[in-house]
Image (cartoon, rainbow, N blue to C red; front, side, top):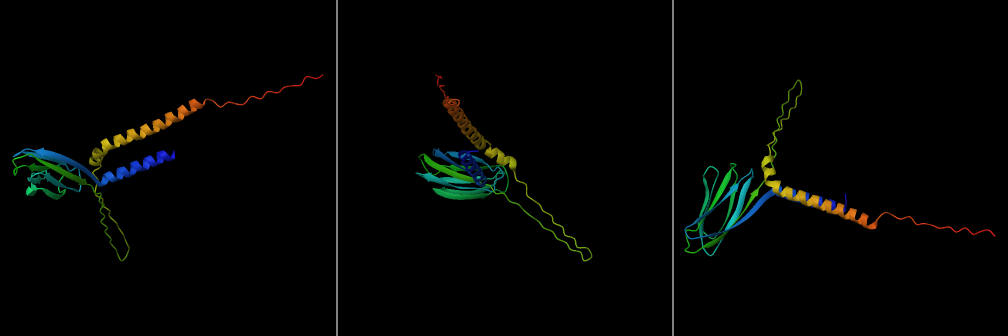
Length: 198
């Protein structure tokens, strides 16, 4: 494996691990007077959803509901606010932005990130008997929602795969082209002249 290929694989690995930490998005809406826009966000097994809302040229009402329909927060007449929702249930969280304070269009930017955490839990139980010493350990691990993680990473991993294959193919073609250009190695021909005997 060449040095260039090794560096490429290291960069891909670093990018993959950074995706496990969080997934971010930014949505910009232009909202007419007395209108509402919504943004549905799948929790996908994340630990929390957090971010902020910024409003240009006006104020809005901003609130969010859980997958079961519970209102999680409500900010009336806000131009900027931060939010942090601990993911208590899996499903679709919905954000609502309502232009109820202005007679003109307002522009809002909703920036949010889904934070993923991998948590392992260990329960250690010990028991000792005077006659025969016994020691038992029970380890319980919390399952990781791998299918949700794979669904989130699938499009991104596909583009990485295409990039790696393309880079390897380009190197292979370049190497073959160079060999073809140089041709087969040529052995020098040595001529000997025999002097005729007199």
